[in-house]
Length: 240
Image (cartoon, rainbow, N blue to C red; front, side, top):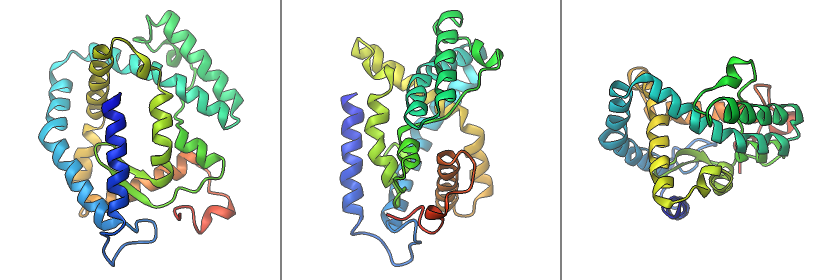
């Protein structure tokens, strides 16, 4: 956990230093494009050299039922923080549904390795503290690429420590088990994105712009649950 915190602080420092290293061609929602492109290349190199090969081996050689169990286990843990954010956003019905998901999967799904809740028709949600801040009226601010964490915005970067410490896995002991689980979780997440990343590599002329635009559009959709932003956000949703 200390390593994650240090990485976040390093990201913040690089973000601030990057403010002075932008070029003159940035768009309104990406005023730090010079820094962001450099950090995108750094992350991409780390991914190509280390993370993607490991994720590919994980997908190709680990039995599929084990991959499913790992994914379900961490998904069930993630539902706890999703539940909290649903309640913070006033989505009481969704929050209650998340409570039911966690209870069913933990109890009848052998600690979460079986997703009994989805089979029973209990919807899986996707909420984090960045979305909660957006729901409360906090604008996203400029786009920024964080080292290791990847695409973000100023608002989502500020929310990141809350997401880290709101995750029950953060409090797992001993620390060795926590760190091992965190590494497996990252690999599992990357493995689920292999097809999407390969599609981006094949389809995008400018991979950086493709990633940026897709991220910002998706975050807007998540904050407003797929609906158009209220009028007060239309002209400056991405602005600081």
